Length: 145
Image (cartoon, rainbow, N blue to C red):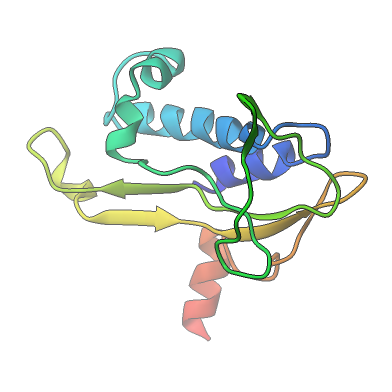
């Protein structure tokens, strides 16, 4: 999940489209679902069939502004909006595994979502919530404190 978030953050740059961070995260998530045996086939096949949606049913983020879920168009006409300096949004890929006959029991009821708020800058982006622990080591250290 952390790799998916990192890929999305890397894609959050001026000139890229609103959908670029989602697409970057989704490719990593699809591979992870294949690696876990939850989805079958190639990454492209999983994306085309949308079989990942059983475990990842939302998009990777939403606008932030005056309200937590600020209003704003994600597309202009039928084209994804281009990211530009001053835009602020969440990057929050997730994975949610419900019990099912074809899901290993060890994975039942696992849900993970890593969220950061990101501002697009002229040169790239700034992660506004970077201080939150995200790696296994950081979280384990926090739990010991």
